[in-house]
Image (cartoon, rainbow, N blue to C red; front, side):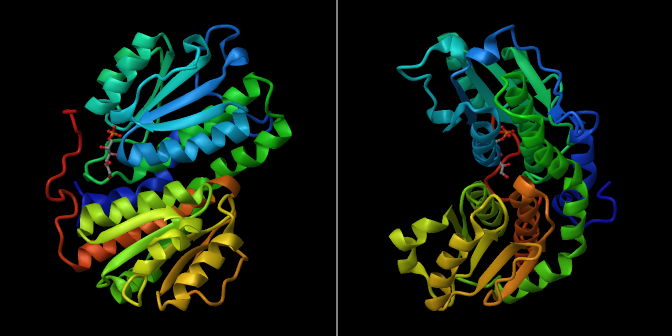
Length: 362
Ligand code: F6R
């Protein structure tokens, strides 16, 4: 059932080209510069839309953070992300001009359902992005888009993160086009990136040996810092979460610019820095921050856009050119890094201690 893989997690990491193909199948029209998620917003709703609030937990929250930046850029709507357990509709908003989007793989996360119930009670329109047909969230929202990633068995979310971001990117394009905020010519490069995403992920998977070597070389460190800027920030957060969940090592993710505002005090030769150095992530500025950590002795591993060379990196992992989804491709390297660090330590990768796949208590 694990198809020759030792763990579901590695199998699911390797399934991403195919799961992403399912996610985008029939939904992209590159020539027309549009995406179709079969949504049914009431007439006039999108034109008047003032804010998109994304509510989600854990990895799904990081997918939401990635998407919020895309919503602002592509849909021309203010977009915020809240930790579902902390969400309140909030003052100063008009409910009929707000779309609340729950991002939840399982569709059963109690914190996320609680947030959607508070949004519904406030009178906002609600939307779910989920992997699970017939899940509770689909019965509580006005509209649903399925990410079509297929079943995910490993407790640590991998392929569903990629499919969530891809689905939300298509939603951002669809809303932007329907509102008249996005020209076909500006949508096209995003759609081409999504179209090319499965192949780009495959190239990363084909380079797994390089990540395995880095995991073996640096896996026994004291702590791990993951950094990026812009679209690289949610990927840094996700990279750190993946590593801590399955390896039980201390890992932190943050905006690269924040290194010098505190975390730099922790940096030593025993704290590798993993960086997202791609398009959509202000790579040159990020590299400046990485260099500051290297000056204090930290080894640096970078996921780097094809063609950009940062010769001072200790390990450079190339990311194919796919525009704003490059950080999403870089994330596959971070998934593999977490996997191999944990595997070298003999951890219980598919069922980490203290965690459950679906968290149905608040
Ligand atoms: C991390 C992980 C969790 C989930 C979170 C939300 O690998 O799996 O952080 O992302 O519990 O779950 P869903 O998406 O089912 O709402």
